[in-house]
Image 1: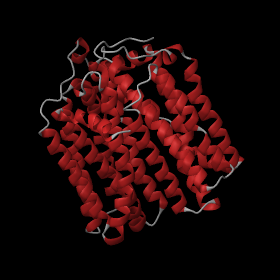
Image 2: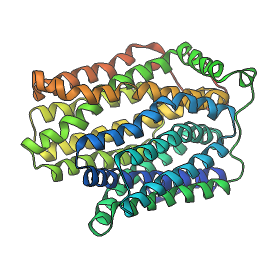
Image 3: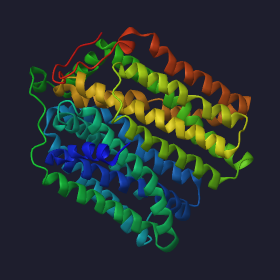
Length: 421
């Protein structure tokens, strides 16, 4: 892969609106990736209990999930640029206040949970609006490369953020990391302010209806598109079983049978590096049947890690499996985002994105809650094997659906929003 080839992809960023969106979103993601470790250790330090940390984490997740569908409606009704700016400013305030509370030793579980909930609210509006904006300003014929570039930046941030946070925590109060995160939101808002026009959702008759009418319109569109419905159902089972099993049972296996936290950190890093590799590769490979190829890759990358943890295999073998998993998931996710951006009408883009996110994530909290008790009943090994088997089925059955197998991108017709039943 030549440097000239990579440079040609970066030429996409010559577009001022896309360039500003790219840096604004990348900076805020980096800030977000700094905070989980810092906030976790800070809450454990002043609360002294895992339940306190659980309350804070739930406060972040629940508003984001509950308001996600509303965020999609708002993103299709009002200027997306304004939504992103307001969300970033609120993110600056919430994270900055958390940082100050930690630095001044005035933090409690409940005031941190309240401010963390505000951060969850902002993300539920920012994400659908930004996805719609990217789809609208990305050049025709280059949407796949554009989404791949954003994915690469996000994947790099997911690796770099925890590393930077770990280094800073050795020397400084965790509150300073939250303050740094706050300023990434402020910087992101300033960049978007200077981006120029990012396009506005097209007005339709439904835009004058109520929020619930617009949400129903989005849901009706998704349910009529078999390929979209299949994507959401498959992703929901995927997150329910695979991601929950990795998140809960992975560290447990590493602690009992591998080398503990350092080995699990190595395995997690391999996942991130694989994600970057997948995002780079998808810029150069444009399959004629993108979702068909994407699901084939997911089959390869979905089950092996859980099965290897069940053995358990050695850390290097599991790390290689996670690299492949990261590659396949990132490759698939970019193809999925491209399909949605090219085939869904722009005035529905934010709603469809939020419905997709909501449907994909809805069962994950339940999975995180029950995977531990289930493993206590039938054993960790059997739980991992069962989760791997069902996950492989969840990413295999879409290949039996004709609209998944046959979905294709017509050359030079990105503005023709096809309806695929």
